[in-house]
Structure formats: structure tokens, C-alpha cells
Amino acid sequence: MEFLWAGWTPIVHSAIIVVAGYAVLLFLLRVTGARTMARMTPLDFVLAVTIGSAFGRTITASEVPLAQTLFVVTLLIGLQWFMAIGRAHWSWVRRAVDNPPVLLWYDGMMITDSLRRHRLTEVDVHTAARQAGYGSLEHLAAVIMQQDGVLGVIGRNTHGDGSTLFPYVEGHPTRTEPPAVPE
Image (cartoon, rainbow, N blue to C red; front, side, top):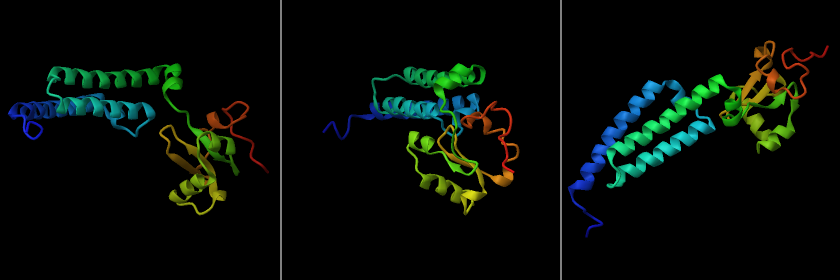
């Protein structure tokens, strides 16, 4: 019968953990800023899953004290904040934790090596173009897979000088000058 009812103590414990943990989590996310809740990178996904797992476990485990729950959640958000600072200040941290953007379509050419390496197909590029409101790839300057995995589409009419793409253009001589425009 204990699997149906174990008394009020576990229920009260869970209620305290949920209310206090939820309040502290909201406070910490508010204090650490929008970066913590921005579109998820792989690092952000790991944080969200880990916090969810830690918080979920402590809600139902009566042997885990409130202080331990709050410490774990605070530590995880602190680590996320520290990594965000590291990403902003040191390129080696960015290289270690971020996926760089990847060109999939550029200047009229499908970049099949990039598609294959990231397990994408030409259909994915066409889908991204359609979702961005383009009926033809000929109107595109580039399709780039962003750091969060979203496919970004840049039209020829909004390409400008292309400077946001140069670091990712394979074989670009200086990666600071625009590519040669065919005459």
C-alpha cells in the first residue's frame, strides 16, 4: 500500500523543493541575462538537460535536501555564465565549445562536402530557401548553417559586400575582401 501513499512528508518535501527551486531558477536566469535563454547552442542544450535532470531528480527524491538542489542549479548556471564570458574573451574557448557556421550554398554552387559532413541534403537547402520565401536558388547569395543548426538564407539583393560570409568561404584568399564578381 505504500506505493500508493507514503504520508504527507514526501508531498510537503516535493512542494517546498518545487516552489523554492522554481523561484531560484527564475531569479538566476533573470540575473544572468538573455544569453542563458537565447536560441540554444549545443552548450546551452547540455545545460538545459542537466538542470532539468538535476531539478527533476530532487523534486521526487526525499533524501535530497533543498540546499543541495539550489547549490547544483546555481553551480550549473554559474558554469554557463563563466563559459559565456570565456566565449566572449578567448577564441580558444569559442573553438572548443561552438560549432562554426558552415556554408552550404554559395555564389551559385552547392557545397556538397559541407552537406555530407553535416548529414544534410540538397533538399534541406531547397527547404530553407522556400521557408525564407525564395522560389529559386538563383536568387540566393548563400545558405549557411548557423551555430545553432538553423539554416540561414541570404538573398542576392541583401548580400551587400558579403563580409559576414568571408570567414567561411573556403579558399577565400584573405577572407577580408569580397570575392571576385564575374563580369
